[in-house]
Image (cartoon, rainbow, N blue to C red; front, side, top):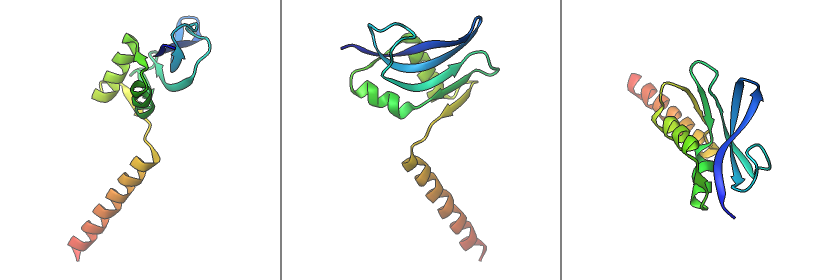
Length: 113
């Protein structure tokens, strides 16, 4: 089974809103999906890109192919282009950042004393 990570169009007429989905390449564009891994809204200013890069990388490691449009979105999300990019972080990443912030605060307190 060929699996692709591609865009599924939603929204109203002339007001597109896309979901980044993992789907069988033979399934219809807006048809049956395996998993949703992000969202993209080109109508906002700046454009909103909300991707779960960990899930995308996991699916790529399993052999899923990115379409050209999704590859461009992933590249934009990685580079942090002039878009409002929201990247979901795992609980481990959030815990590490919280620990780093706590350690920095403790170091700052130690420096003051």
